Length: 481
Ligand code: ZN
Image 1 (cartoon, rainbow, N blue to C red):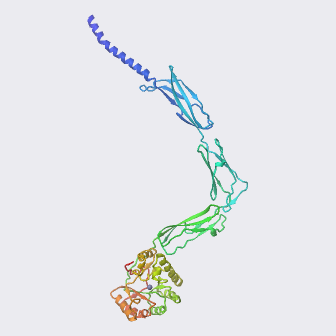
Image 2: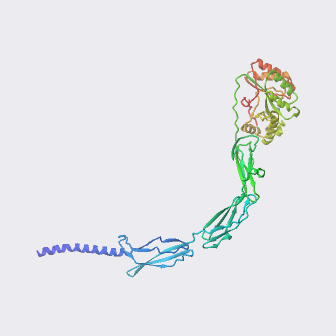
């Protein structure tokens, strides 16, 4: 019995010892763990304070805070020490000390006293002062005062515009102020108004005519005389252009309006084969001494033809008007008909074309979009300027002009020098064709003399005679240069 009790006591002892050791270890851990102190800053550890604002200690808590047992600890007493000069920008430190059982822990808060106030700009106004846009503004005075830096008037940047002045100043802390003065105008800046608006789209052309503008001051007085226009539109080339209209005050500012001009390809009507058997008679290089006789014959038969005119014989210019009035198609050929002059450059060609077109307008009242290249589009006489025909055929089409070649050559400017020869060439050329574009020259008397028989042959063979228009088949040749 005694032995049994002893045995059970011996069995319980190690269990007690183990429990005791565990409790001791936990107590030590608890004590050690609680020795971690954490500071909690109300308002943050970094604090920004506008200069001039009183610093009030927001408070700090120091808490024994274990890693294992969280915030099981308690608040410790904290003392704060430090000095913040609220009237002077700078960084100030406040030191905190927490103590417990003879031990102390430290922490620091930084207080940034900052200048956050921008300088104040004050504008002076002279009693009764007014001016005009042209007369310009005479400064009435200004000052700038900063809470920290004091008088900053000398640092003010002044930018004068046409109708207002901007004043800007920045203090040492980087605070920036801007004020704007509206200039007291009795008459303000003029207004430029563009006819057709600032955005225009035009078809490519040899000419550009500015749609115009109006300009007036605030009282409605006309000021268009003061407008300077700059910027060129190159109407021959598709693209974007700018025209600038400006009235300059002469004082470093002005009123500017910009017109954007977009040049786009001109429309070119599609050619259509005529429904009937058709002969288009065409006569180049006139008007000349035989044009009147030719017009008489055409009138006699009621036949309309096409005249590709030049400016070489001024005494016959009135024949251009007569041809137009009698229903013939009047088209551009060339003012000078000088191959080496007109094919020297595109610009030379355009200048010659414009001169010839002017004759057409004078005589007919309007420009024409029909023309024929001297020598035809397949000429090689222009080969001294490589590729000029390729460029011109394309650019003239882009500008809405249609050029006509021919598919029946009378050869009256070649070896054929007789009326009979011209007649036979035209007949031979027309036979088998339903659409004939015949080339003749009304400056050749023997060619003009063949016209009556050509018309009679055509009528007998079921042809109608028509003048060319923009939808006529242009009989283009292959471009050879
Ligand atoms: Zn010619």
